[in-house]
Image (cartoon, rainbow, N blue to C red; front, side):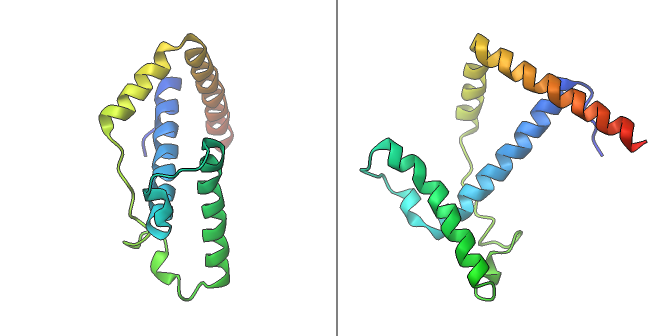
Length: 126
């Protein structure tokens, strides 16, 4: 079991974990709803609502029809289709985020709070 040594390692570990979950969710939704693979001609405000609506539709379908959706359980090949992002793009986004003073301050604040919560969790576990 890996334990982060400082707030930066903890933040990066949690960020990577959240990023993997989001990529997995988008991969599953893209697999089931091809509309996300096509360029849309709707206003950006409408486009931003489509993934959320599709997640809701997907969850409703799963809750109403669990037997026929057994192929999409976690770990199954149909639900594990995740569109891998371009690593260079991701690193560029992180560099851009780190260059913004207000973004860096927010990131540091979040990391500090996470580290404090993590230390409290470790103390209460003993």
